[in-house]
Image 1 (cartoon, chains in turn orange, purple):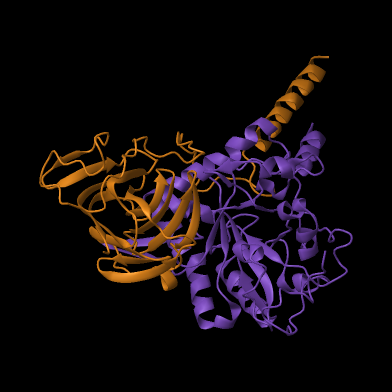
Image 2 (cartoon, one colour; image 1 turned 180 degrees about the vertical axis):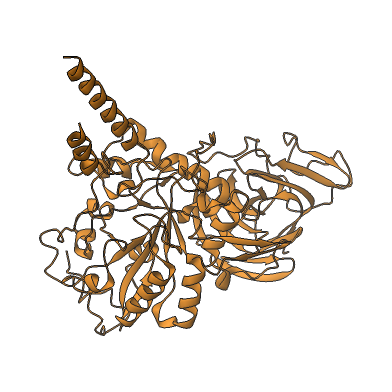
Length: 240
Length: 308
């Protein structure tokens, strides 16, 4: 009897070891994880599933001409509700801890053909992050973005009700990398003429974009999430 | 007692209790009427020595590329499937290469002092070398990333590797957050499985997140007949459908017919695990497209895709 109990106990013990050793994380088609590159992922709390932009009130476009170099700390080219600080000749737009991009609409807009130009001095930004100008804006969620990143790529995107509709750009190196890599200073200009917008980066004509409607209306600047940049200048000039 | 131990040792296997290995399955009925199948082949580890049961050697990958090229295939990505394979040359047939999980041997950086270069033995280098030497083979592959580990193994280069892959013309796909089989995962957990990786990709890719819409199902399986496809299709990220095309690992070659005939077809594209299959077996499939010339390159594969 004693031998039989011992026999049963040993059997159960062996079974439990086998069951435990058979457990583990399953991989594709049922193989084990367990190489050096595997580790538990750290918690990622980024869970934004809908496009939301910085909730700055867009100012009324009261002018068609603007050339702001931020020499005056009281200057407010984006209206009085814009809380980014102006000092040392630039507006300091630190969006480095936020996932949502910032869209600042100007108090000047285009009623016809014209030029919108912005000079950025990137302080800290991941290489894929985009800065640019927006034209044809109806709100901070409806506009045409023309921008570039420090990977040397340009992008043209339409934002409709907060949803991005890629138009062109951000493609492979062969077709899109027309700019130097890791450029700290970026001057982006959009020349609106009729149904076309010329995108220039640092003076270089990058792309001519055809739009279904003339890109007139409010204009402004765009700063992607996780970007810390200084805006040194914004210029809005009507063609006539 | 000894008999019992011997019996247990014979029955014991390290994979006891795991999912069954990939089964060889014929194409779904009705899909063999026309040679419209698009082979999608998958790899996991590609290394020397071979890493694990589902790994292959670098030599095997190079050999496979050569054999597939010789057989008249042309590399495509999931974007190309959505775009109607318009770029496939008239004398070539489409083939999709996929690499699951995001292992370091798929894309590895070698760091020497201040210089960083792509490891010549990693998958990306092997593909670049081969495709540069054989431009008729096309260029492209899809890397499906699961976030239960550091993608491609080097945390400090995560974002750079993702962006570089897209820059080089490769595509990236979602392989869920914790690599959990959808057939085992409760429905209320699906949203996190699908959308948490999208949020992580977004942080590393920004606006380029729109390029991620393909998903490879962990374990290669996806529930059938329970409205699972509709449920999955309902998840949106930044207002865009998070998954538009889904890949199984069922050892079959899906036809364009199955994609075009029903919305569910887009979520049930078959794949062949090349650690289990060979190029010779693949070429034996009846429904893969012929490499014969098309009348007109701009003809959207009319002769190969049966009209609805």
